[in-house]
Amino acid sequence: MGVFDDLIKIDENGEIVYNQWIEWDHFFITNKPEWLRDILRNIMALFGHCMNCTALDGCYLVTRNMPKQPLHERCDCRKKNITQAIVKRNANAECDIRKFTEYVFKNTQDSKGKNQIFYDLGFNIDDSGYLQTEYNKQALNQYLNGNYVLKNLDRRGQRLAIPISLNGTSFYSGWLLCPEGKIRNTTPFGGWIK
Amino acid sequence: MKKLDLVKLRNDKLYKNFNLVKDMHGIAIEIKYDNADVLFFNPQNVGDYAIANVKIVDLELEKEKLPVELEKELLLRLDDIIAKAKNAIEPIKIKEYDIVELIVEEDRYTKYGIHKGTRGCVIDNNAVQDYIEVDFSGIDKNGEFYGDCISVKIDDLKVIK
Image 1: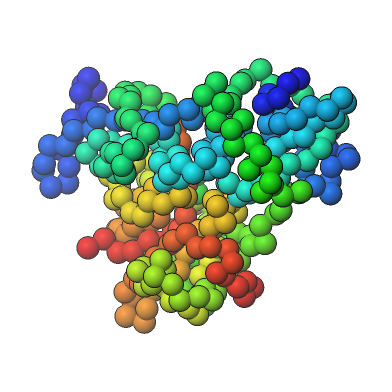
Image 2: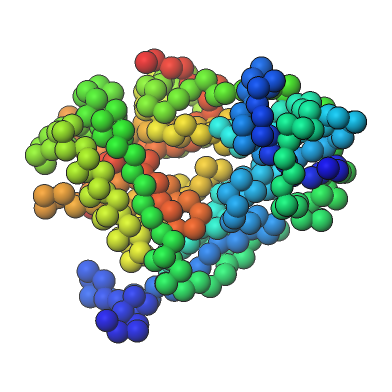
């Protein structure tokens, strides 16, 4: 594997893409220990700091695919360059199996038709474990390659639409970007890729 | 132990009424003999907090400290923080995978195509400033995707099941 293999890639359109990673940094909020991070974020909330910014603190993003900085006037955030090695070491994807067992496969009314998408692809509730593993693997890989779409950003954080492929069909799944390279699934089906 | 030290609750026996649990962290804001008033943040709702009187023997001092600049600002705002504090940590009344209905018609939701009466599924157990994540999206009879996954104020929701 070449030195630049993760930094410079050819995407599916044949275009050269450059993956320089940054860590979003809001002043005074530390990443570790996690309890201190939570306290500091709460203090920022008490002081009226922008919660969008504090939600982004500690998050890893590629420079070609990140929210604009500064986010607003008198923004206290900056970006710190980090290596792909740090991202790879820390990043992980977390998809709760209950997204399938208690949401998607619950019934048509509660899942609002999402269950049928998975039935049509040949899956049912017994495949939840497999789907959980597959989602974690594929989403992490896509994220590490910078293949995500920025969706809503608010006090809860930055949402990402990440492509997932199952049995030859691709669609977006919904994820929340968390500090230090963690992505957490919000919804297994977040729209068709157009 | 002194004012603005970071502390951890090591014994929650006497504090169940305040919904405090062992290993919760807080900030000591007043030390009075054998007791301390401690500011605890709600682990389920960022921005929500309570101040509880705790015996010092039930607290463990953490080695980490708040940044000096934050301590200064906290001292300036302390009276206001104390005035607005709750007496106990309040669990949020909605949980993950509850089916909920939006009971208001507001721009902050309609801009995503979500209207009063729309139903969705709560997809996170944790709130931020009383906002929780709800998936209102679905597939229509033509197989088209509609709606979105957005933050909603807890009071704007009614639990259906």
